[in-house]
Amino acid sequence: MPDTSAERPRRIVARREGPLLVEGPVEIELEDGTTVTSDRFCVALCTCRRSRMYPWCDTSHRKHTPTARPASDR
Image (cartoon, rainbow, N blue to C red; front, side, top):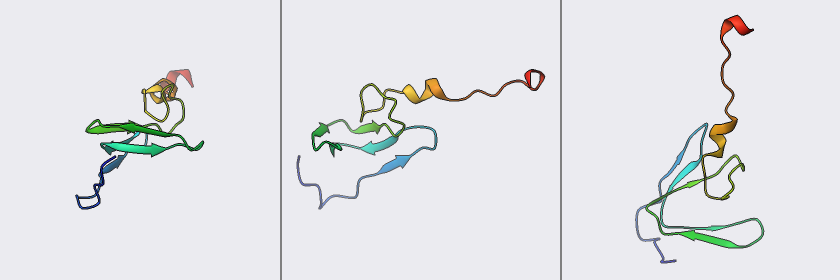
């Protein structure tokens, strides 16, 4: 991966109910020491660990978001 230390800092956008959006390209070291890379201009990193493509987000978090019940059902 090219050295980008002379460029501007990477932008990371954190969302309360979603993934971390990271300006790419990125190189990520996983817990087991393996490295995954992406040369996309922006990547979504899973923070809920529900993704089948971890560490990349596949929007699995959306399936587990609680929905509000109508007041008549309470």
